[in-house]
Length: 215
Length: 95
Image 1 (tube, rainbow over the protein chains, first blue to last red):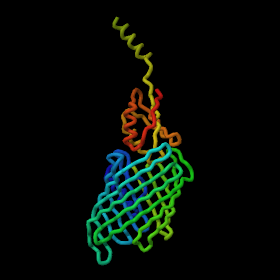
Image 2: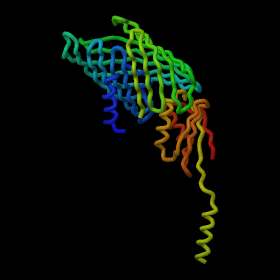
Image 3: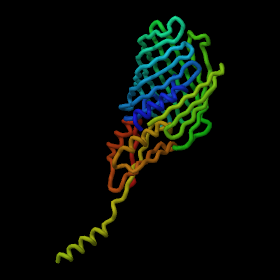
Image 4: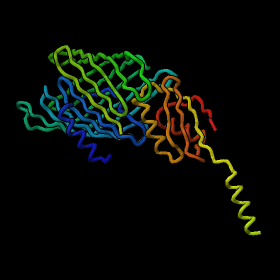
């Protein structure tokens, strides 16, 4: 699959789509498209992993609440991985930089240099899953905010290699400065082959829809 | 005499056992996620010597099947797994 095709898929699905909670670093030479949609953000992140230790990619994200559009580059680093016979855990650093353009009120049409950074941690075996991540986002006068979120999940059945795998999960998002600082989203994760899809509905009636493809 | 030599060579060739395909069983740590283990298919799929692989998430064993007469050393297999982000516990062979 060519880069143009992958970019087209990402842009088309951008109409859907912050974090998709799949691992942000793939295998050496692997491409990944991560498209995510939640109550306030639509985002697409396409990255390439030269090694299993880091990935380089582009990110485009629209914040519907604050009405700004971010476009930039993102680097994900696998700081540490723990491989055990029946479990795996990972610690990542995710950072990026780019430009934000606002469509909101007095800031309409204004642009600002932007950076963001955060850490992510996940732990899973074949039955249970848990993760945590945070992000500090700074777009100068347009916006700056801190968010953190955590997930727990359980697989209702243990699938074999190649089966459709299903997880029932609950995600809690916390944005201290938001009007509603805490959002709880029960969701279903399913994956088969190179596709991972997540769908959920928050306690405030907001839809989460994520899609990850590995090439 | 020339005909006899050719006949002998032909018989030797026909009677020689075909080079059998072999496989390697790799016990891998961290193999808990089907979606992530798919990466190993991609990695091994790029190897000329590899016919296909089979992943068993229950036993945490990856079986690498080689093309006829081809193989990869234990060091090469270990490097491929490690570079993909997993750890190798052990390798056994089925010749």
